Image 1 (cartoon, one colour):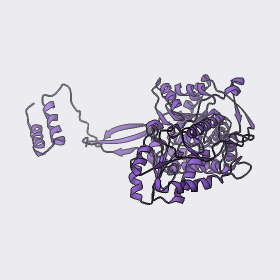
Image 2: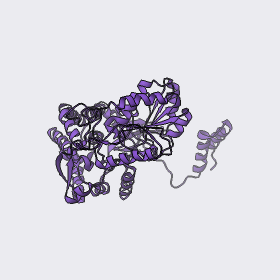
Image 3: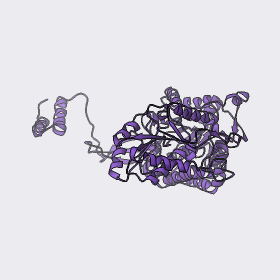
Image 4: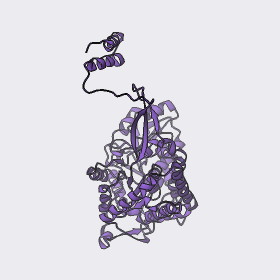
Amino acid sequence: MTVPVHVQRGAAAAEKPTHIPCVDPATKERLGDIRIDTPADVDAAVARAKVAQRDWRQTSFEERRAVLRRLLAYTVDNKDEICLTIQRDSGKTRENALIGEIWTTCEKFRWMINNGERHLRPERVSSGLLVHKKARLEFHPLGVVASIIPWNYPFQNIVNPIIPALMAGNAIVIKPSEWVAWSSARFIQAFRGVIEQAGHNPDLIQSVQGYGATGAALVRSAVDTIVFIGSVENGRRVIEGSAKRTTPVVMELGGKDAFIVCDDADLEQAVHAALAGCYVNCGQNCVASERLLVHDAIYQAFERRAAELVRGFRQGNGREAIVDVGAIVTPLQLEIIEKAVDGAIAQGARLVAGGKRTLTDQGDYFEPTILADVTPDMEIARDEVFGPIMLLMRVRDDEQAVEIANGVSYGLSSSVFSKNRSRARKIASQLEAGMSAINEFGGITYMAQDLTFGGVKASGYGRMNGREGLRSMCNIKAVIDDRLPINRANKLFPVPPKLYGTFSGVIDLVYGRGLARRWRGLVKLLSRKP
């Protein structure tokens, strides 16, 4: 996602270089200041986490589940207060804070409590030809996880890596975006308190606050793995920094998700899913449906229905009234959105709804916008916008839809709409993406926690969520063990005279093509000749 995780706040930051000024984007109310951590502070936080992790790694799965249950209970019991804190720091609606952050987090807790141990217990696998041995995979904690996260989901982005890190026996150091430093500090402190009340060391969860220097220091520190969510540009910086210690990295770098609407799609179903894909969280989503590829036969009807609904959207401060869309979290992102829309119109896109800043006397808002007749050569069709923008692109058939969908550098999520399930599955199978949803907005895959979350191409690598996401926070150790107590040496030295002939026969017998080759292998194996 093109969220500037480490971009300094201009003059305000220059005036107070030791602190982050925090502002409510919906009202411009000053929330306070958060102290910036120095590189020395970062190293100290990592050191504290390492000490706490030594005891935590020895805990049982039941002890870890007990802590996750307490954190889940805290989340449920304090959901209204959490939502209010989210709103004040991000400007999003109350409903999006509850559904997009609290609900998703609670489901991740539930899944991990019920399934985490099953995926972390030693797993028996085949020992192949080593019939006298047993083979298994063991899943050991890595140590300390570093998590560098953006501003679009202040609560969910924090808790998302905490849950698997703790379940796998790790500690975690979190670097939140400076744009939501105020809420992040409160959430992390609350979770530390819950861990302490549970009888464990609260230093299992650490946070470091600041701009680029703080994030860079965490990447260079003695952490054991890094989870990064942010822009491609910042992702490259993380990779460069992590190379100094060869620290593994899981990267989610946003997308330009395709949303394909076939000529036989249910119009109402597709339109409402598109509204979710484009306008949930005011479009500030990694898995936003940024390109709607609509078949000719249904294009005009789709545009009319979408415009009818979008023009009726309510926008404003979600703490004062029920609104459909809230504010843009950062003024920098507001500029990016405005520039992208103006550029698209200049290149020939047709403005159907919205298209400009609004409520400028209150805060940072951009109207829910629809741009029609967007073509693949336009900048807005290639670059991630991360705002409340619906891009309508006309396609003549399924083949062209797939071609355009795959014609960008990103490959995170995707959606396909058709009443013919075989047709939809065929299209989805051809899309270069880490996730696909049929007759649903692609973001719904996040709620199926057995599924992984991640992309291909410039959208990153590695996976979050599910078994693979949990195991990415482990040292997966391969172990060979005795099947029977047979203490017999395998003598390779000095080299026996028949060693080459014996193994040549084994290779022909087991892997040779055809009966003749295998028969020769057996004869060679039984031969007394070298």
